[in-house]
Length: 319
Image (cartoon, rainbow, N blue to C red; front, top):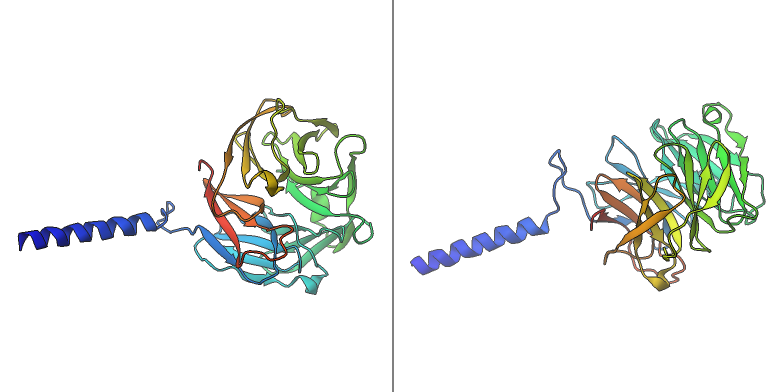
């Protein structure tokens, strides 16, 4: 009898322990976040991801249809939020949400930067660079604290910009400013981009060359960042926090990882310190911060028969 009771208590304790280890850790409000989020569709290929601050929401865009999906960090399944074809958006690539809850989407080969009001789903702007379809590939963007938007192009050696004052105009269709000519420096291959935390520089990925370049915003001066000869992979999506740069490797033949780089003062050099890896990765492209985690869009670029369902996955920054 005593032995049976001991065994019963032991089984109960083990069950409780197993349950505790299987459930994700709660956030400060006691809510539980999920590790794998499911994106609808068999040919979605989610490329860009953006986290909306002061909300549970994040957004991903389909590179094949232009549809935008919204997810909650507390719910496993994303849902369609915008139908791309309604707005002439056929390819959605890099994305960001600003402090006014406006969603910016790089429209890839259309050469158009789309801007939506997230509260109403209203199309606010289409900023066009004027190039013909497939002559351009608007790839990614970032927004500084003043509200200026900087956009990369994978085909053209150009950095584009939207001044903050342009975003507040009522006109929907506006030109996209050619801001910096990169001829003779980086590109083609422009991809991920971040504004440094001092608001003085941009760090821009050249995926094809495996390089990152610094652009001094006030001078429009372009210089290659020195990593001491260390191979950083093929940089795709970029994020920066506390002068630590997170760079998603785009070319999977050298591994699926996010390179973590300690940037040095002035941002002309950095020290690669480690890789973030995960069994959940399926050729990720871009990332977004969610607290001390990263949300990674599993793009599966170039995979004809992708692993289904498409997913967004959560990995710890210190994992």
